[in-house]
Image 1 (cartoon, helix red, strand yellow):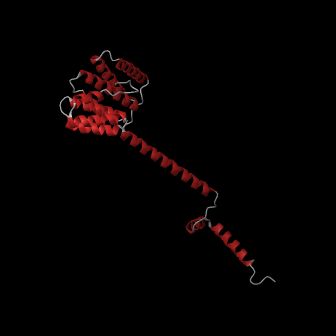
Image 2 (cartoon, rainbow, N blue to C red; image 1 turned 120 degrees about the horizontal axis):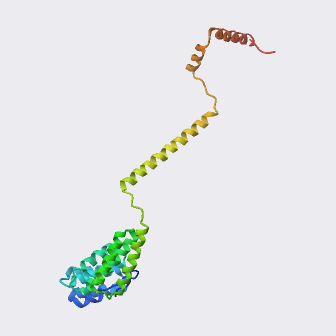
Image 3 (tube, rainbow, N blue to C red; image 1 turned 180 degrees about the horizontal axis):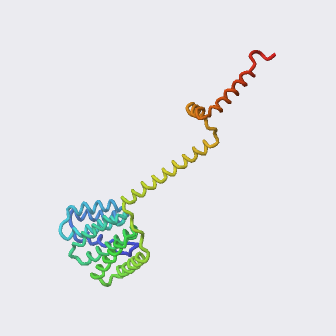
Length: 238
């Protein structure tokens, strides 16, 4: 039985058992039992085993069942592929259900990824379901819901995704700016630390300063040194 978008449905389970026989029938029945117990991965495995042996009309039915099991696990992309294979059926009732559930998959992924093109595909799928069965009220409801979401996204489009290489360039630029700022701060801190310390002259700098003195200044310096030498006591201070 199909459901609306928030409660997607299971259209092919009962149909599968009617069309199959032998081991394929047994595996499909096991899959249905596991599905009803909400053991969706185990159900999918049984459907897949049955599908590997099924031929003719049974194949699209089992693809539909596998799609339902995947949908319940929120594996929407994989489920969509199974529903698309179910569209190969010549049974219009099954095709209508496959379009309906494909619309559900497109809607879920479109909302998650905020991609209007996926929502448009969802609307197209529900529209195709209605073309086959115009009385499907669930499909009508879902189509209106999807159209409202499309309109909202057109009014408030999400920002375009940034290309990966552009993101990488921006990240590299940010890292360089951060490194340059860090080095600048370290340099300023070093300058501030050195500002309060007296500067020590090297031997070479002292010699250059002495050489730059005039002869008169040199003579004055010698006289001063001589006076200081004479005032130094030669022995003990009694």
